[in-house]
Every structure is written in structure tokens, then in C-alpha cells.
Amino acid sequence: MYTLATTSYFDRRVAKFTRTHPAQKKPLAKVFRGLEANLFQPSLRLHALKGELEGRHAVSLTHAYRITLT
Image 1 (tube, rainbow, N blue to C red):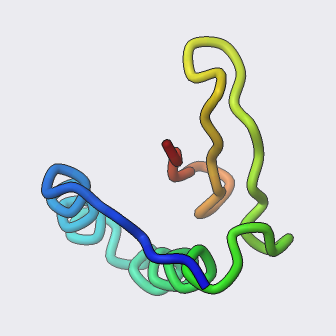
Image 2 (image 1 turned 90 degrees about the vertical axis):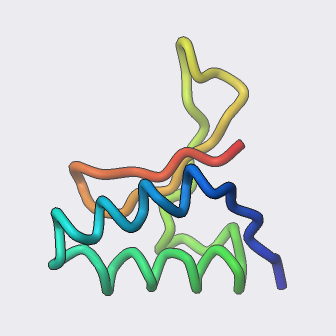
Image 3 (image 1 turned 30 degrees about the vertical axis):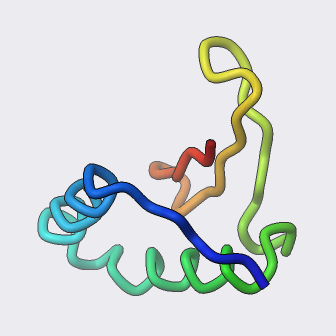
């Protein structure tokens, strides 16, 4: 079991994202629960990033949105 550590900036960005994309609120909550339960479960589609963000990973929220993990 993992614990998510967020910053106040991230919390504000999540609040703004859910206000502008209310349909993504439930999928976002599902991703957060999945991250806390098991970071490596296939449904999260964890993948390494390349280029400027090399060395970081991301999980997919939808095809258009992802969450970058540091």
C-alpha cells in the first residue's frame, strides 16, 4: 500500500481540472485509489517518459490526459 504525497499546487490544479472537466472526476479518483493500492497494476498504464521529462513516469487518466509522477 502506497501513500500519495501531493503539494498545495497540485491540489489546486486538481481542483481546477475537476471544475473544468467534471466528467473526469470519477476516473481521476479511480486513478488515485489505484496508485495508493498498487502502483504497478496494468489498468493504470504506468509508463516511463522520454525527452525533457526523462527519468519520470506517468499514468494515463484518459487517452488525452496523464498524470506525471516524480
